[in-house]
Amino acid sequence: MKLIIAIIKPYKLDEVRDALSAVGVQGMTVSEVRGFGRQKGQTEIYRGAEYTTSLIPKVRLEIAVPEGLAPTVLETIQHTAQTGTIGDGKLFVLDLEQAVRIRTGETDDSAL
Picture 1: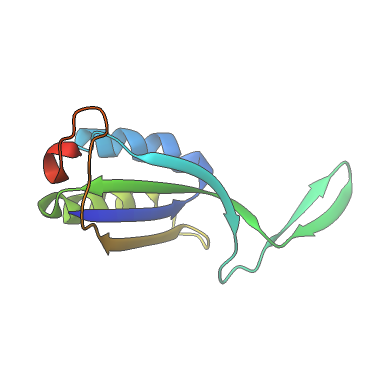
Picture 2: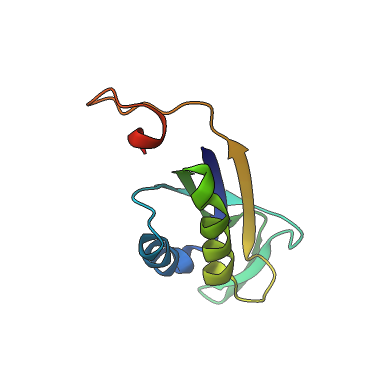
């Protein structure tokens, strides 16, 4: 099993979720996060005053999938979340040692 962590632009969330559902992803965890990368923040205008924010709002997705589905999920997220501009995000893939469904006690792939 693999744990895929995706950091994407917030307005891409619905599009990514729909695309992942279409390839067989049955669930994911979504968190609102803030951070910075190469872009080092952004300049915004609020009530006529310009200010700089050093942390950009993003969305973090955590998706546990069987190992065989991981390449498809990565490709789907990359294709769907890409805008071609700086700040599109990052994808991380981690080995997932064990998963347990609390309600039924199912483990590993059947727990996903």
